Length: 133
Image (cartoon, rainbow, N blue to C red; front, side, top):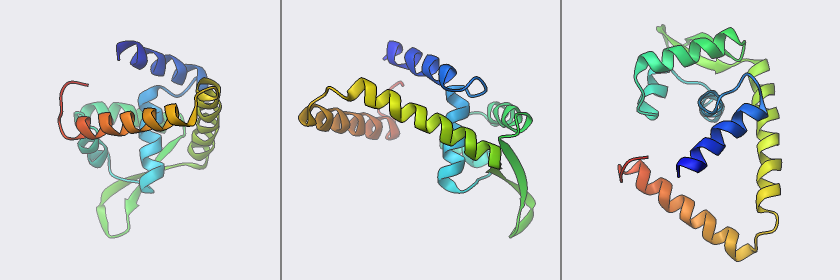
């Protein structure tokens, strides 16, 4: 698992020089949700608010994320991808798909199905607090 995590971080660094694995994950979450508050990110990833604040600051400086006032509550800022953030995320997503196709292209349908089932099972156990990640 350690080798898997190291490889994921190294791959993220090669995909785009501005995007760490954490940055990619946060941008993907914002895209998936159509924006959210920093506190929502912290809660979802069980990270300290200061950690999220630092990460969001890096993404803002890079022009990938912007804060907008929540239309229903002007005391709240919601994080959204900028146009540049959308472009970078799409670029990295395309590169990741190619990398997965290269790695898994020779696998049989049965192997791919089992692999997907194992990943789902692992993620479900992790989401349920089933041990150290």
